[in-house]
Amino acid sequence: MFPKNTPKKKDTAGPGKMIAIGGAKGGIGKSLFVANLGVFLSQMGKRTVVVDLDLGGANLHLYMGIWSLTRRIDDFLTLKVPTISDIMTPTKYGPTLIGGGGGKLGSANLHFSRKLKLLRALKTIDADYVILDLGGDTTYNILDFYLAADQGFVLTTCEPASYLDAYGFIKMSLHRKLSRLFGPESDYRKYKDFEVARLINAFIYSNTSTNGRHMSDLVEQMAHSKPTHQRLITELLDRFRPGTVVTMSDAREQVDELVSRLKKVSEKMLSVQLNHFGCVAFDRQIQKSAKDLVPSVAKAPDGAFAKALRRIVLKMEMA
Image 1 (cartoon, rainbow, N blue to C red):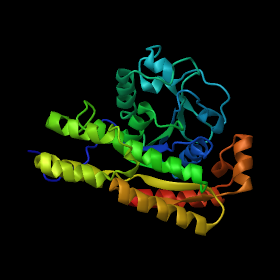
Image 2: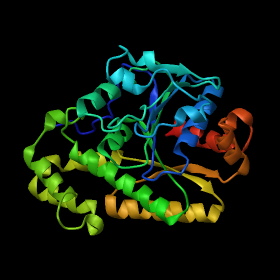
Image 3: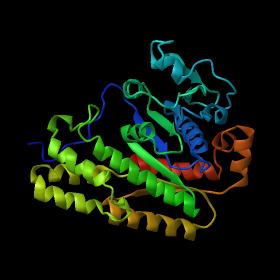
């Protein structure tokens, strides 16, 4: 019915790799990470665009040393400018910036058609890397931006509330991916089957608490009710590989314990394998750089943050 090994579809309109930085909690350093990753990649000679998709609370421009913006995503979505390139702002640190919403009421609540328009435009950007800075929640818009990327990172600290939220973000992302399996933006839309969609929705939206339900239950149910589509679900689970990055870490032992716990629960409950990309240790110079609104890797190209990013980028390029 469908190919045995459906490759991940790559949009050929834009040559760049899209990276999404998410995590269902504020204050874990997403914007700081995006700004410094963008500068680091620019220092490597990569054409890099950083995009602020925290549409209700945009602040990435501040971390890039820009106090105010003349053009934002709102201007593109409301047709004040015709193309995505018209809202790009050069920065003195290397990356090009696309600023988020202007703080207007409802700016974070994008209509589905506008969201698709924005995603399609982002995929046409002529750059080596396009990095998306996502808001700290699990709204449909945030999850859809995350799932549209070639590589998704979930950031967490070692605090219990943070890594619980990180797991929640991973779970919600997977549920959203399953619920949109046959959506117009999906590679699998031509295989739409109403019974499969019903089984998926029954699993995700069941009145019974999903805290104790295993994704393997859905796969097993699919094997009995819709064996023709079981492999589609198992393939989706195999290809869903969120990357984790631990920020503000103090002790290596804490990081190892946290990553091990996240991997185990994700494999057990979600049938998903996580890829851990590394950690960014707590450093007062990084904190000072954030307060000064100057990217740390711009001030210290050979500093601790730059070294951590070098390891993360190397693993990303090998993935």
